[in-house]
Image (spheres, rainbow, N blue to C red):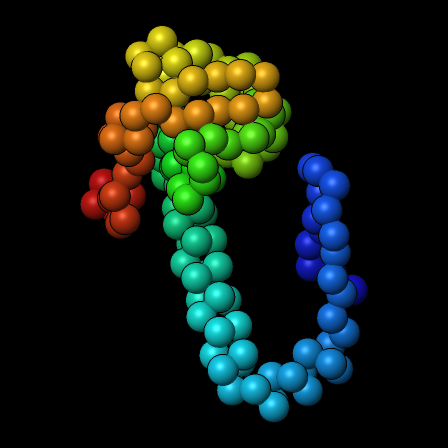
Length: 138
């Protein structure tokens, strides 16, 4: 049994590592075990941050945060994603996402092409993102 499903939005390759093989590798390679622990801790922090955004902040904050996260370390700060997919991530209707993206495009914060968002002014988007723990200060 699995706790989640994944759906690829583009063609790719999948590597399946069996549980028994993974456990053997972790026992044999301390460095690998440590790297996986660090990765899991990073994922947990990211999930906590995302839950805080979803529970305590509006669509603009959630959308800005997700776009910044997706665009970091991407060439030209370009994100290949549909508005429908963005809406699913941030918990908003595609129409709501479209309206906010159009506003940011008119301000010069982002550039829009079909299936692509390019961040032109990260600092402007950053102003919409709450600081860590901001929800607790309310």
